[in-house]
Amino acid sequence: MTLAQNTYDDCLFQIIIIDQEKEIKLEDATDEEDFLKIVVGKLKDIKGYYEPYAKFSPDHCHIPNFFFDDYLPSPGVKIDDEFINQISMENLNLKRAESSSVRHLLQARKLSQLMNKAWLYDDNEDSEETNLSKFTNLPKYIGRIFHGFNFRPETFSLIVNKGSDEAPCYELKPLPFGSDLYSVVTTWENDPSCSQLTESDLKIKEIKSDEKNDEAIDHEARNDEQEKISRYYLENRNALILELLLSGQAYIIDKDKKTLQRLHEPIFSTHELIWHIELSLSWDSYYAKTQENACPGFRRIKNIPQIRLYLGFPPRPGYWDGKVSKIDKWVNAKEKSDDIEQDPFPFYPPKGSSDWENLKLWYVFPPYP
Image (cartoon, rainbow, N blue to C red; front, top):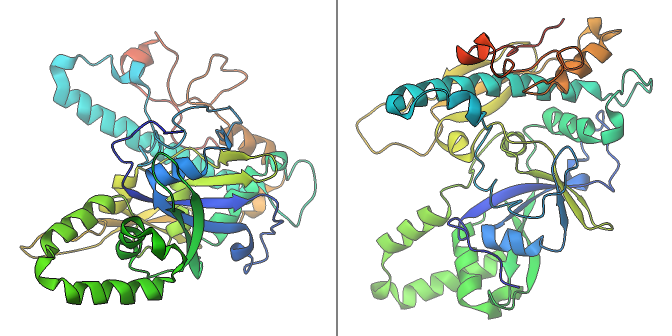
């Protein structure tokens, strides 16, 4: 079966695959390799490899189409079109500016909810109140990624199509971090007989080929092609698994039931994480802070983010006891509420109200402690 083509089909992406069969505990800081792996591939190969799996959103809704197409590259958090479309298209610049502000504040809200969700699960406490959201397993995996945010596995798995687009034959090929990914991918695609070679063998093969055909090689064209397929690839990141989580590129897999579930909806776009924001964590603060990654000089801009964003993620506070049910309400609060008594912390005001018409937002920050 030939999958629908996408503009980004030939771009490389990274995703996290979490094996839900693997039991994990927050206090075990050495088990990431057992349950988490990073899979790399072109979008068309990722779609093809996971085509047999039923796809689900974080809230368990079945997504039959565009599961990867709408999220690779990640668009980040999406604002409500009805809310922002109150601004006339005649004021396009104003609309763009206010859309940016609303989106930034929605990102802040989503980060607060996500990080509180990571606090909801605690391996050391088994009370129903403490583990209010435990039955979903999502807080457990989210918490594990936050606790091991700077973990980098020794290897990643590259999806390789040993067949053709019409008759694909996929396999996962383990490669060490730091591999010349572009060379490996293009060598496999141009010479299927290389499918059993190691990454080291491929480098040797490519060097010999370059020496033989050096005059015929258009290095500028090669660099352009490499930049084209790698333009959404997060390189040299200290918090890679955290960035993949926050861009909606982390998935829970059930190999027996053949299901794939997105761990969390995206907050940041892939483009933001490449050009604007590099993520990190601060263990001793409740507050986020930013630090500029300065690149002075009159030269072509370096492909590094402009700022480093430190997210405050201290140990769960002592006043937690007795407040779990309130925190759970904030964690699961919807952006729009039809019943303020049942869901009292919406981001958007009721449609048609004066606050709605004045583009006034309601809950950006948590109502507690």
